Image (cartoon, rainbow, N blue to C red; front, side, top):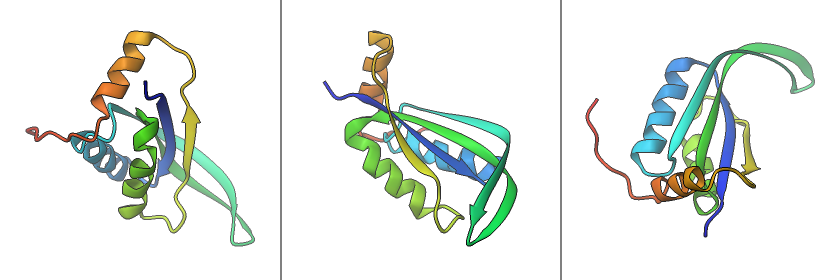
Length: 113
C-alpha cells in the first residue's frame, strides 16, 4: 500500500494558501490541507536576516503524489524558493491512512463553491 506523506509549505497570505490548498484537493492530489495562519518567520535570505508573517500549509497526500504536489505548489507560488518539505507519515490510524491514500489518487473532482 502507498504510504501517507505530509507536505509542509508556507505562503505569504491566507488567501494564497486557501486558493492553493483548494486547488490541490480539487485535483485529487491531496486528501486534506490544513492551513495555519499567524506564523512569524525569521530567516536568512540572500545574506540578510529577514522576518515575515506567513501562513503554514500542511498537505496530506500519498507518497506517489508528493512530487506532483510540490510541482503544483511551485507553479503558482509567490516565492522564488518556496518551502517544500516531505514528512513521512509512518504509523497512525489505519482507517485514516487509508482515507488519505484513497482521496489523494490524482482523480480530481469538480465541486461547487
